[in-house]
Image (cartoon, rainbow, N blue to C red; front, side, top):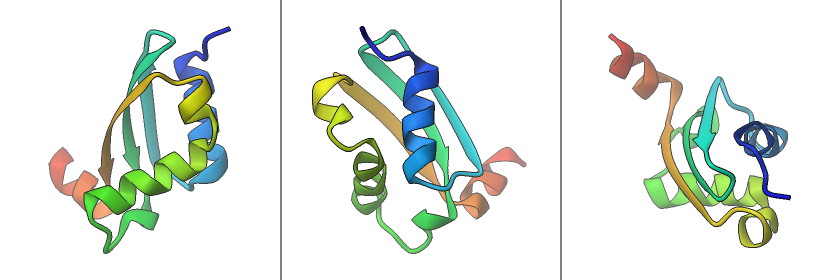
Length: 81
């Protein structure tokens, strides 16, 4: 059975503290907005690696593709104003 966007959201939330976490998708391809203080001082590749680590083997086995926007809380706040 393919994971739902809610499943993917839960997987990420279990492994990474997020202040905002939105996931949309069709069961194989997903898009996520992830806001976490853990991203402070990290480049995009390192941020994505944190998310992949939270997903673990699910990224290979269950999730075909994940497009993500990773922001710090300050970046998210600046975007929202």
